[in-house]
Length: 355
Picture (tube, rainbow, N blue to C red):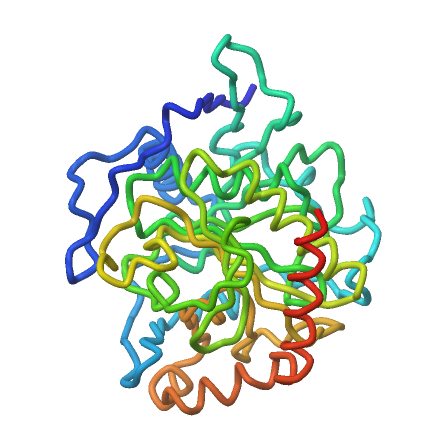
């Protein structure tokens, strides 16, 4: 039987702040961080991964975007071949690889949320299985799979979004990130899952300026590159913001618009005078051009990491020669045309206003 990680709202870490080098000022590791990091390291030492990660070559590309480039050759060479994706709303196929087929030893724990009286809360009706990603892109890279036995396709649900946000709040380390790739946005497996990993480098998304759209629902537009939407919540607003995000992703699904999400500790959207505060969670949503078929593993495939400014390169030449302008040109190829994005912004704002 898998180890259970049981948590409550009281376990959320709220007093998170970083220094000017983006290093946490907290000396305490949370119970969640300890469980993830100990379990992940144990599986690495037991040889359950496809390769040993080691220390990755890392450099910050000169320029205003602060892109963090990393060289991870083994991920491009040794990871499992991604599935062929033909539709954003593709049905789950039990004959293909899914997370019910993994080695049980890869499971670190099952996340279960309890209410104050000790019973599982109705808003999160299923457990979330946390297992190592055997082809990791960074330290602690895990997959968060909501109740694998229910065979959800790779389409976000409100409880899955809530678990993602709450996982970030359970961590005392601002380096912990969560994310999601929809089908058509370089998801590799059509079985509902989110990614979680640690990246100890500053990302612009943590403090990027925004334009308010519906602040009362935590909804903003990113003012920098790449164009996207931003939600923000602190611990008391998680359920409502998770619901609003799900309304947006449901709208995108119905419109057949592929999308990526990235969740990270970040400063409040309008805290221009306190960009070192990390009390809450920023959730970026990027609608983008859909890509179907099997992805090319040697290329810089633009998904949740790349849109957030984290660039895992799979060959040394690209890692060494790419400039900020090169990366912007690559990412721009996957973004919606400006007019289409503005039209979608208007539609989503109206959609959320009516809820």
